[in-house]
Structures are given as structure tokens and as C-alpha cells.
Length: 467
Ligand SMILES: Cc1cc2nc3c(=O)[nH]c(=O)nc-3n(C[C@H](O)[C@H](O)[C@H](O)COP(=O)(O)O)c2cc1C
Ligand SMILES: [Fe+2]
Ligand SMILES: [Fe+2]
Image (cartoon, rainbow, N blue to C red; front, side):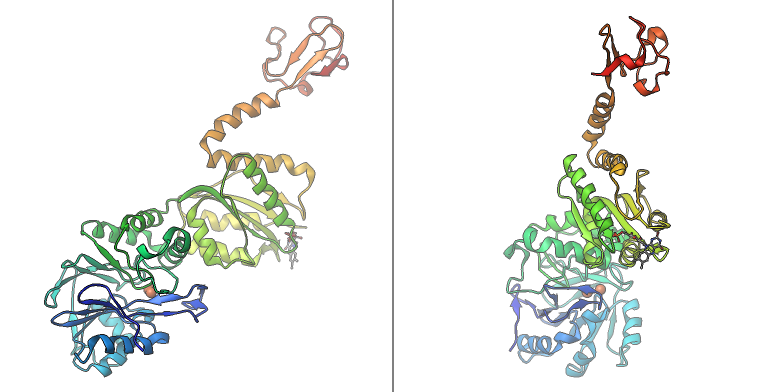
């Protein structure tokens, strides 16, 4: 039976969801499924906006047959030629022989690449801001190249203020009854999927998304109808703000996410200890992930959320541990910017993973790699705690501006000690030194010459005790 949703007097959602598919694009896990949205406008002319993936074609064809209720399908607008949206095109042409296809020139070339049906006789070619009148509605077409693929355009219905946004503003997650973002708890149940979808699908194309956002800002958008996930008709600024941050590679949160690749757990142990030290220094919402356990799509998403990222890896056959290496290439492929990275390496005989990780990370634009780092030669040793603390201090100072001033002062003051002469009570204060006798402020006790004498009673260093 058909499963459709009426959006307005003459607009219907005729898409469908797939909860069976394990991997979207055969690579991204989708435990909550995915929807393929398609919209049917029942105006004087009938206009379908995009189709669906072939896995849900049966449901989709039933849906449009039901809404058309005996009318012919006059037009199909193809906003995006990726097969998750255009897979049913040839079947539509068979079912509705009079069908005209509205698309741009790049799309038309791709239709010919994917299909053998005669497109020349049925194509209505459109360019930037061309309009099409279906009766009550006027549609215009806005090019959005590389907001996933080069041929992508979005369709603007100025009559009702609806933006048919193609892959933009979409998300993973099947439609479960509630089709509208205002009918669900987006922040609690959907925000992570929105982020993971954006970062992995279009994250690389921030500049092109910015171009689309600028064009969209000029429109009085009342409803956004994307090709995946929820329809937005309230609180659209939530989505726009997220897209603004993601497309400019601006971290959503000043916090640290830590990724480790560890074979036997020693690298993991160091990461856990560092995470604890960062928490002690006041950093909140720290996350830690095992790169062998968590799919890289979730970690790319975390990398877009957080301002600071720690990469910790064992050396593996002279290289980076494989799951970490894969993650680094994924992050590089998604163009991550404006982040601060820290690196921990491990290796029992020739640690090399740190340098190799930095080689990949330094190929990314506009990031900082901290000088402070940590090398383990199998397992963290107690004497390495100083280095670990320096790394924690450097990360904390970078995450929390207030930590920088506090820590520098506190560190210097607390590191300075006092020594009392047991004979006369004279106090040597490292912070003050003894400028009268040529000893500069800040001179450590152990740096005083062996023949140092108390300036009051002239006994040697051995007569002093730490205060
Ligand atoms: C298959 C394999 C290959 C390794 N290759 C290297 C290597 O090329 N260079 C090196 O210094 N250590 C190498 N190691 C040692 C590990 O890097 C080291 O023991 C490990 O980092 C310890 O930390 P973990 O408990 O977090 O795995 C290798 C270990 C294994 C199991
Ligand atoms: Fe796409
Ligand atoms: Fe898509």
C-alpha cells in the first residue's frame, strides 16, 4: 500500500525509507537507516522532484501512482544525478511516456552516461535562476555545484517559500512517522546523524556549501525539503547555524577528542591517563575512541565537532597502525581545518608513527600541531609523567585561554622552592635569588655552585634544608 504524507494543499512526500541497508554508499554505517525523499507537486501540471534509490522503488512507484490518482506525470525535476536519487528514472519514463525531464546541461550529460533512454526529446534544460511555471507554483533553479556532485542544483518554489535542497540539509536516519524536524527532538536524537552525514558526504566541499548558503540567505525560506531525512518548517536557523560552522570548518566545541590505535593496550593506557589529566585541568566533554572499534565516519564527525584532537598510535611494521592510518586519510580527504593536533607515538624498537602521522596532518590546511608530544617505547613509564604533564599543560592552555595565564604563573611560583639555613635561619628563596651576591632571581638550589656559602653565617650548602 502507498505510504505518502501531504505537506501542503498540493505537495506530497512520496519518498521511502530503508532500514535494511547496512552501509550507505557501501561505506557509511547507518544503524538508524536512511530515507530517500521525493516530492510530488499536484499543480495544473504534475511535477515530481527527484526519485529514490532502487531498493525502495516499489514503494515509491506505488506512492506516486496513488497520489497521481489517474493523472499523468508531466515533469520530473532532477536536482541530483547520484543513483540514490535517480535510480528509478528509466522506469518512470517507461510508465509515463510523456514525461519531460527538467535538468541542467551537466545533468543531461550524466543521464546519458547512466541510461540509454532517449533524453534529447524530453529534456527541458535550465540554467541559473531560470523559472518554470506549473500553474499556481513558480519554480526557479539554483546551481549548487559540488554540494555533493558537480551537476547538483536546488529548486526554489517562491510561491510557497519551499527550498528543495537536494543533498544539502539532509541526514542519515529513516523517517519513523514524524516527517518534520519540529516533531522530533533534533538535538537529542538527530544532531549526531546530521553532523555525520554532512561531514562525510559534503564535508570536503565547505567552499561550495558556503556559496549555496549565500544564495539561500537571499530567499525567504519557509520550508526546506531535502533528499534525505526530516523536512524543516520551524527553527531553520538551527540547521543554518550548523551548516555555517561545518562549512567554515569552525569547531562546535572547545574540547578534546582522542583517537588511539593500539594493539595490546599500552598506547590506550597512555591516552586514558592523558584524558584524566586533561579533565583535572578543567577540560570538559572529552571523548576517547579506539580506531579499531569505531567506524571512521563517526570519528570524522567528532573531528569536525571538537577543537582539539589527539592522535595516538603504535608503530606497526614500520608504519602507522592500520586503522589509525585509514582514519588519518579519511580526515585529510574531508579537508579538516582550524584544529589543534597533538601526537603520541609508540614503538618497541623504532617508533615512527608520530612522524608519519604528522606527515599526513601537516598536509592539511590551517591547523596547528603542538610541539609537545610523547613517545612510548612499549609502555608509559613513571619517569615520563613530566613529559605527559607538559603535553597535558600544552593542550589545556590551548583549549582554555584562562588556563594559560593561570598555569604559567602557578607553575613558576609552585616550582620555586625555599631552603633554610639550619645554623642561622637565613632563607634562600629560588624565586628571589640573592642579587646582592650576584645570584639572579629564579636560580634553582641545585644550580648554585657547590662551594655556595650562607651569606649570613658562611656555612656550606649541606647545612640547608628545604623549607
Ligand atoms: C605486528 C606488529 C608490528 C610492529 N611493528 C613495529 C615496528 O615496525 N616498529 C616498532 O618500533 N614497533 C613495532 N611493533 C611494536 C609495537 O609498536 C609496540 O609494541 C606497541 O606499540 C605497544 O603498544 P600497544 O600495547 O598500544 O600496542 C609492532 C608490533 C606488532 C604486533
Ligand atoms: Fe549525493
Ligand atoms: Fe543523496
